[in-house]
Length: 589
Image (cartoon, rainbow, N blue to C red):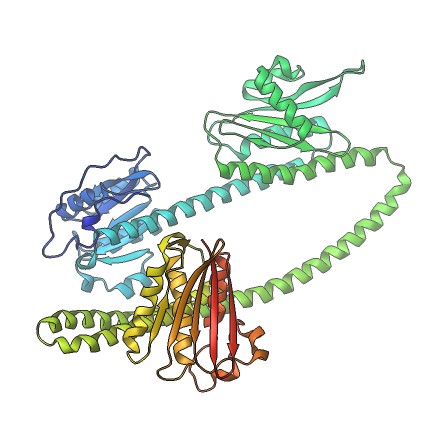
């Protein structure tokens, strides 16, 4: 992902004093552009958006602005291009709620749930953010007065990723539906030859892109003279006339060799222009299917074919079992019937158990959703006033530099406290994401000593009477880590060191290299931890006896351990009552 025009990142796009900027020419990506629908009655908004997006690209593809100056014009555009992934939509155009009516048209009348809609308004009072988010199916809300080039790019990339995931899910769902509808009739076919012919048709439907692919089915057949040949037993499209012929007379030498290798190794082969699939049975050997089409096969289609192979392999075995059962003595029928009754009873028991488990799981998921909603609400309600406090402190600091420099230290304390409260919120949200397995690392090359210094800086401001000693010269300069999560780890450890050590006690941060590991140690001279409690120290919600009288939630160290483990590292602790503790973090570099 390439980002050009960095000089525009922090400039407001639609503020009262938009600045002109000259952007250096960059070589543009060659992929098809991402269409972005811009709906706004101000032509200058379209021009500015087009200029900014011209210097950005995502996933090797540039952006294309599709303009509409009114809601009605946008409806006409969407009627012709319903596959546009993202729309930047103004609220007030030909009417005060034209944009909101357009949202309802897209979602309800067009039934388009895939498009990501970003509301971008210059008059937030006309459509308050909270009401709009609740009442309308939009995906983001941006005030033009706060919008910068970087925020616009971030919003578009997030929306495109969401749209891409939704499209992938829909395609996979459609593929699974085709697998279910294609495999069900196969289990009703009894003769092996009819089964293979029907299977060739159903495979073609699983990856149907409008034009059926050419399908060839081959088997190794005894000619009667002791020799075996690979013979075409079914065919569709270009191979329909090859049924009954030897494979070497139907396929080119390279293709025939690939089919023969698949027949021998019984391993599926996937390429962009073809797929070679092996179906195995217990008594009737292996049948190989070769699929060819003009459109390239995608990785998702490879997985669908693999799933179809696994599902239909049961059909092969069912056909074989049927042919075996026909030859068996009728005396076995009673035994089969008894076994069927037993299986029915087991199935009934399994269904009852499954229903009970599903009810319990549903209650668990409901409780988890309520917890997630609560945390999201708390996060939103806390972040807004904290952001206001931080912004006010920044403005006061600008004035204080000119009028009252002695206020700068107090303002720094305010901002440090805001940052620590924001960190506490992040810690709780990170813990919730860890518990739901939704936390994904965003690794990047990070200056490790600088990251540690930035993590300690708010504590220096908040605790000017405490001494923070850092010796990081032996630490690797660069590490490929998730900077935000490791910063959270360091903040938790330093915060614990401050809370559990006496006033004025120094906090030591030491770093060095141990082979391929970066080792970061945080040491305090505080209360220490009883040896009997050390094995449980990283358990969620565990608080030891030394935590008496100290506020806390018991999730900090658990979060630290989980984040470090996600990085492939480890965390350890050494402690002595009355003399302090050392927490050691080991990270692969």
